Image 1 (cartoon, rainbow over the protein chains, first blue to last red):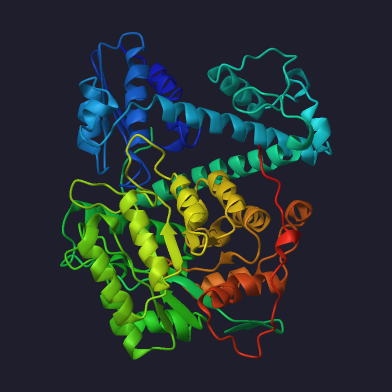
Image 2 (cartoon, each protein chain N blue to C red):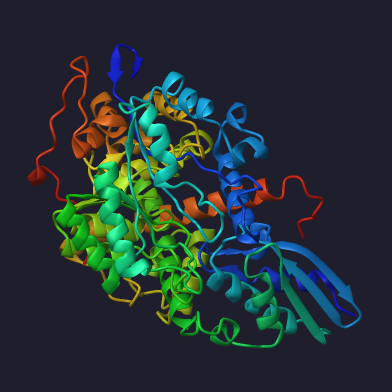
Length: 228
Length: 342
């Protein structure tokens, strides 16, 4: 028997790579059906023309997460209401890669894109934390001198640490807080521009996420779809 | 013209459309999906009293256009930006030819921009030249995400595109508005990638590239390019409506633009009929930078607002500004040197 709570928990581990938020929090899960050892999930997105690359990643990631849930024999993930619904749903169902799913259009798999957005997500969390530290009165130089262990506990800190691990930067508590996406410490004249830059990355992500959520709510305002 | 608290503002709307997405003109499910997506943008960000029924939104009248822009919307001059989308709509979504009919009736109210698509090759180049002569075009709107047969889009730095940009230079079409929003192609890359603007702007220093939507939602990539290239401007279409539902986010976004791009290169745009200029102008003039953000971003003065609402585009397009509008000097380049990340 499949535990529905475990299904939801599995989907909560899948993120929109652009927004760095869980599909379940974003309202992208349109429905969950459990039938014996089979779980069927339908995903929906804010617009008909949302980028197919990220849509593919989320659909494939959701399938992989569901297959790891105890008791699941088969996991079917369908993307609905999207210009590439059919291609993406069947590509993921057939365990095809992205290039195979979009022959003649896609020329490489999505690993590079995922790394790029993992880096953005990391810098955005760093930007949020730095903004908070500035509000607490720390100067740019003081922020740059902090180590991971000096950061006040918060959800942003936990996420920042998780993204560090994903980027392979490690979580040693004595590691410097202010590093670029390659793990290089930011010092001297580079501190101020770096703080400006990560502030912009954080604002990008925040704005994008609120716009996507708003569009999703508008798009599905008149439907009876239950948000899982 | 808009007046509030003794301050007068000349308004140039940098981005307007007169589109036809009626069911009769819609060719396929993609055209259907496109207008519904546009409608959700409109419905999500507009104040409730400005939300139209979908039916009107698909095809509105010339009366709607003239009233919403000029009679009620405070706009002095509007720039028509075409969006062809001929793979989605039988007669196109919003073409220069359709816009020209309106411009002929109201020559002082509109500036007509053209467009081109490098995938049209030599024939397209000849047609573009003929259109420039016929309509006296000074600017183009480019939509790199547009589908054409099997192709899902193109880049400004494609060889064919560079040939068209050279033609623009030759013909004096020196305002290049680039739509950088959702694109489908290349599939395996970031669909909002603005890197091609960088390459084109470096190669064509004498052309001004107005990046519409400020690279939303990749602010950091856009800012980076704008600091590298002095001929890259920001268009506020799609960003400015955030002022209503997400005022704080908009204030931050504008603050970033002021820092990275500067007050002389940010331009107002309603993207009508996506949004109506009336409420955008009213709210923008009323807006203040939230107190706690002032140390980071500075105050929004009437002069800054005047530049953004009209004076910057008036300078770019050589539009005559009435004497009653205070003149505002352009910030000296050496006074603004944003710190650039390594």
